[in-house]
Length: 327
Length: 284
Image (cartoon, rainbow over all chains, first blue to last red; front, side):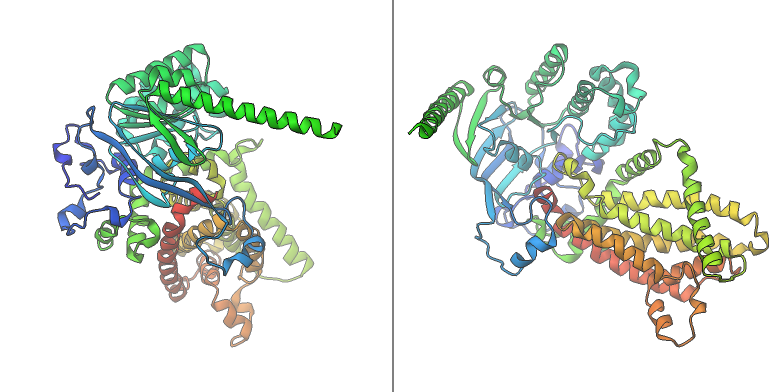
């Protein structure tokens, strides 16, 4: 947000006359910074009148350019307000406004890393470690409770395939709807629609309501939409396992293509083979903090060792409990 | 809009909670302007979803208000034995906009909580959700006007050029409903009680609004009449009734007052919504 605007120089000219396109990245870059992280800059009027600061942060995406910069990220959940609160339950707490109440839970804390264009980063770790929370924060869906996330370029999320689909609408209408949710410019989407339909490979079903689709068809359409726009930064959550063998091969090919096009990728997966094969960096997350960052092979080895260790411990524990009734 | 948008962009790019009031409102207006297409698709989806699985399909758009009117006509003329000339039309003129108001408010209130899955999947301006809900209701109201045309067949002597003012009154009602809907959607995300309370409040509100009766049935200078004057829906319903049944001008002053109130409410509602919006993904 604070960078001088160079969007006119951007080869793609992204964001200049297309506020719709610029929207998601705007949220990713500008919306979530803390004021202290921004250089104090005299706000000049021309700067302020630009549609969005997106392109300011998105010059040419070339290998080596920063894509995501995460500094001391913390995400805190307020357990008091989470999950179907009713007045009765929270009224007594309402008047106690203590910041450090045990009702707060840090899903992530002190997470810092940098990702450059052309890199693909795998986030691995046990269930409940905070991997998905990290991805949600990178996508701009969760605001950091502390620290800064800066992303440079258009971010596309593929968290759950088929999110935003309306069962009653046809596949074709859903392409428009999801694109509108994602903030993709309408004319751009119109141009991309044929290739999406082709990639999703659902034939005449494209004009049938989505409620008639199989899970695989929905996943394919979702994947095709999310990857159609050639994002600068692609966030994936455990989606490569969906679909049949053919589609899995095709989606992996598409992901590899995106990686090669100097796009940055962050993916959360339990498929450790995929991590070592396609990612060039990995971080291990446990209990909300980064345990280690490094080459995938090393991180996967570390993770496997820790899992094995924990399994042994758990087995020992189980064995001890098993003996208790006998004594 | 031009006055607020520079403010909006000048607002510190911090967590939305620290934003200034005009900044929040400006961002809200920008959300709506930039995502008008999304709102349109959502309205379309909403309309396709309603009555999609029913035998009569779209005919329910007309049948629903007509049947409701029939019930009240029976209730009031047969059971309570009250005689207002051309009562079905008198009633229908108020039932139709009330139905729009009540269902729309209900839909808007649950618009954010009903999309919790999506809110945790995609980053988008959540303000489009209550806006789309209220807008979709407008379409069903417009279709309901066809039913009004059918009722008119029996009361042609009540038809005057004043009916052309219905869209104008509807604009005021739209603003009022949108303001309430946006605020309620934000509150319901935190406390689902809001939706439960709303159901009962709207029912009570219905009887406290001149739908089954007219404000003129109440004695001039009575407390009841004074209280009813404070109800924005009174002025809206009486205006609809004046132009359809009364063959006269609407309650201009009342409409203007409701419009002013709605705009003020809407500004506060949008600011409230934008203020709490970042928390939605965290609490839903």
